[in-house]
Length: 426
Image (cartoon, rainbow, N blue to C red):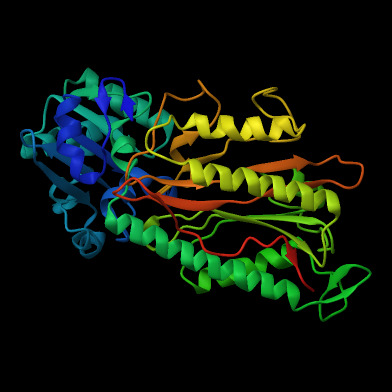
């Protein structure tokens, strides 16, 4: 994959090469408190160590080496040590004292603190900043660094260096993602068993107290199962009937679970070490109407066609184009025909994931993203779907999503193994 003038074969070991290619002297990855799961660049360096606040500094040493430091709060010194990075104790730069020296000006004190850290590490020149923080304070902080001449702040609009390094995963990252997939599939299986354990009355699943089983009940079960297996799950999509026809509807909590309605179950938990899985199954309990079976067969045809076509030569948008061709040939609207469509094929074919649930590369409309190809080490999902929320026969949606790794030989291995049966016998 080419990004501007750079050819990507990226992972963490390529940081020195990427920094030299972009003429960067240092990287700073900010890790403020409260941004945990939203701060993939910081997690990329600290892993599963419980470091809730700090900053990673990567200093380039020539063309083939870097030095990586973690500036940490003293109360997290032992967790910081678990990262294996060189440590900088923030207590050695006493912020209260610096604030007094700056007459209570917190921003000026932060700038002075970084001036001292950079001086001690010999950092200067072109420095790129990453990580999650509040936009307003980040803008003021970076502007002050420039104004005070602490360093040349380098900004990157897209394809930034850290994202580029994260495009492909090393063996440890792949193992973590594979493990998260296994745990996630255990949750999916337990959820299906949970549904099947209920009796049925008037085509509705009934709880022991005689009331209908609802989406909220199922989601409570999913969360308990996920947490029990060590997964971090904020929410998932468990949408039935009309909600299943709206791709990112999370489901209406009070909706009863009924037979013969499509259920889109899209689960994307964060596993140990911060790496995600992203898996979707569509179920009909008891039986499925003929039009749902036909739609499901077509979605699976698109899914299998894309899986068989994946390679490291073709541009990634071409796989989505082929799926659009298939769906359009069968009379279904697509985003390629009408970007505002609310039925048919309403999203892209898939995306990369890792420390974030949505990452490059993209399998989307031609021209929407820079041209990309898959690389060995890529992790990507494949998730075609069809959606008709306002079908007069009853709203419905179908999506099937599996996860893949492009291995070092350029072959795609499916990481997900859970069966893709539409009908769940009751």
